[in-house]
Length: 112
Length: 117
Image 1: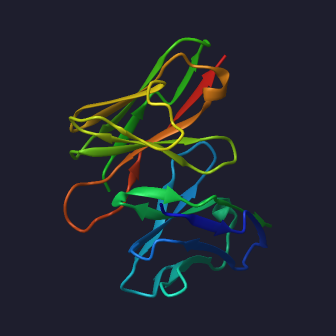
Image 2: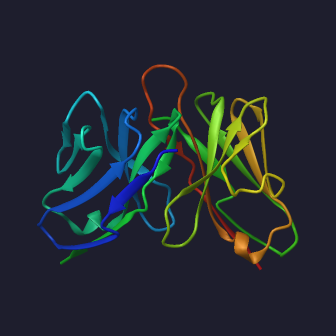
């Protein structure tokens, strides 16, 4: 089955600096790679996703890069703000696109 | 985006009793829904796939007799935690995606925090 590894587990950055979170996956057939943000006690929220036909996608301060050869994709948050503090999960579909397997999560803290 | 509603948001039950959690797709029909469990400070772990009109598919290690799933309509899936014990206390979340097209985004319910005392 699909195996997803996410690093780091915790990340603390100074406000205004950039944060990068990386995930690796095992199934070379995977073609959809979402990132979710989860605040304490709330549901995961999709913040950005990328499909295998592109290598990078950007949405304001958030970007995702994909390296299909190496089977890894990364979340980049620039100009971090206090409201970016949350847990971030990468995910990869397994067997069907909506049946997703989550990475272990990264707890991001933004220092003022 | 599509809306998935989960109820209740919080429930406290006594050990040995059963608890039912509902997951509804409000503005679309979902032939398949998914149930996840999340322990504190951990990731979301897929428990089972709920299939409308047929038996649910459980992930390895998940007891099907303890976590009963019913998907009787295209807009409702229920998860019943039977004979609940304190170790079943967790955050349970369902998800579904809109059928057809190229959309693969999963939409999540707001989650249910279960506390077994």
